[in-house]
Image (tube, rainbow, N blue to C red):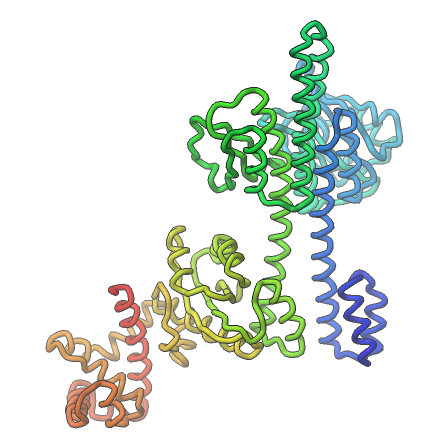
Amino acid sequence: MIDSISRLLHLLGAVPEEASRINELTSTLGLEPSSVASVNHLREEMLQARQQREAARIIVEAATSINAAVDVDETLELVCRRSKLLLGSDMSYISLNLSPEQETYIRTTDGVLTPEYRSLRMPLGTGILGQAAGGSTIAQTESYLDDDSFPHIEAVDEAVRLEGVTSILAVTMSVRGERLGALLVAERYGRRYTSREVDLLSQIAGLAAVALKRAELIDELRARLVERDDARAEAETRNAFLARIEGFDQRLFDLLKQEASPGELAHAVSEEIETEVRYLHRSELSGYPTRGTVTCTAVAGDRILGALEAQGELGHEQRLLLERGAPVLTAMILFEERGAAASAEEQQSLVLRLGQGAGRDWKQIAGQLQRYWLREGAKIDVLAVGCGNVHAARTELRDLIARRGGITGESDGLLVIIGSNLPGEEVERFLAATGTRSRVAEVETVLTALSVQQALQQTQRTVRAMQALDITGVADPRWDLGLAGLTLAHLPASTAAELIRHTLAPLIEYDDTHNTSLLNTAWEYLEFDGNVEAAARTLHIHPNTLRQRVRRIGELITPEWATGRLRTDLHVALRLWKVREHELSRHND
């Protein structure tokens, strides 16, 4: 049995796509249907994670290969080859635009069989190719010959029929608004490309467009060197610059292979051009003042990913060197996004499994948590956060939590944070600085399966109660609302407020008029289950004084206020009042 389980775990970790072998082992082990379903679910998650890592690796390799090419033909061939591999397509090809003629023509192909298809030439705006090259950023069809959503050309349709093409996906290749052409993949069967596949091809197209411009630039520089043999000094200078470009390219590619950060890339570019250069996150680009700076933008399709900003005026060579960093920056950011997406999915899964009770999976979960600096038995903070846009709040907090160590996830409309050294007040202030009004509940505990599950339940219950009472800020876990919180979490805030007013109105009015504290007296008296001595000690008054106040409360409400149904109603109302008073006191402080 143990050997079979070990083999199953090995298969899941090493080769999760081996479905038949995994099914044989689960059958041999005689697992319950629910356990088999869990094994299959885990296998699917691991397959998806592996596919994401493979896609990210291919993109990085594609970026490295494409930008290492030294001429246009080599660049285009590499783009076609990588695109076909990445999407698993029958063929791929690139068209380049002819501006005066308003036409586009197929320049490079991979997998195309017929000469008629390889030599296609068509006006911009016609067919899938012409649409992507001249107008639409993305165009696709599942059945080209039967699709009447775009203008057809008879000669092109005949070439498509001879090649046997059915499905086509095309994305525009553009740099700084200049449409260079289109990158396409096609199949000889009906295929609907997913949004993920469209995004991947767009990323390759973005890299290809920049690399194409770069290759054209090098060709242009070489042509000028040949044409100006009479200017030996200038030719030598340009040759030296080309050598400098090659050396700088090698340094950039080394950074890419080392999985360096955008900040490290900016430092390398700064050293090369001898001018201060810094990395700008895409959130910093909107409305950013650019006077006195030169900005080189990293793009993927229509998405602006970030930029490198150089201070002051740059010479021609400095500008060219700065632009060399753009495709590498694009690859770095895309790689980070892929890694962040995979990490976010793993964290979400961990949060849900911890909330449901880790059970027999605890050892595996504990091992995964170590990757986020969370060790079994260590002190941790468990937080629940309620706000308008939970997904946006999770994104805002991602870097902070990554630096401190911890995981985040979404559970039943709330943001959950499990980490170390993450006070609730700091999280609430951080979100407030971004304009997000939040409700935060926190519990400090140790990292065990049971304690985390209990802490998650407690914090989420508290936030639900805060939402019902329309309370923002950080909840004090000492004022756990218990049954009242569970009940009022499903009531409108106005209903909760009306419950407090209707039940406690006589005491509220009396305290306001006489500057007394009968509300707090009633709270402590009920909290100590009518024990006069204990309640008096907490209130720092004589027991006889407490008895007088209890009688006064009975005169204002009813002598039986501390017994039976009235006791329950008053206790719930007082508990809600106490939480609200605590919140007001915290804000006043």
